[in-house]
Image (cartoon, rainbow, N blue to C red; front, side):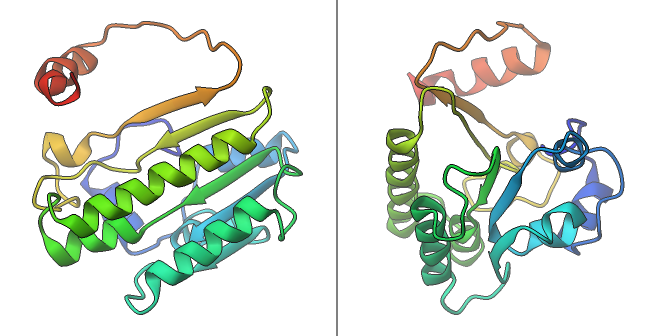
Length: 194
């Protein structure tokens, strides 16, 4: 997601162990272009991307205790602008991880706890959208896919799939490219979305 190139198993392992990313990325491009940037969320991002370390408000990626509370505190800081983010920075990164932790713990995406977290995330997205101005682009994406059993470190289609949603109060002109992968996922999951 951050580099624009397809990931392989080695990329997943390097990310899992928080090895510093060395190479081109959205973060490095933003810094090179002198964009102001701030990160909110789990610590993995500041481990992976050195450019984020100076401008972050984060919590432990794998700390089970209080992960939901820490995530909520981090979101509240983001939406309130208390750390100076809203709307002073050109790029704000918000990475929420509690639903990921629940997937590991519960091993079933149909559990009520997962659905409650998804509803909360939807509420947060709506709050951000309502607060942003017409010149802001909100990109909602996942950094990986997941199976119905909560697995997401493998190489199956479900685990490699990700989504990306663009929200703006202004009109967005996007290309309607028909790639083989897009056709595959469109046909595979069309019943779930319609």
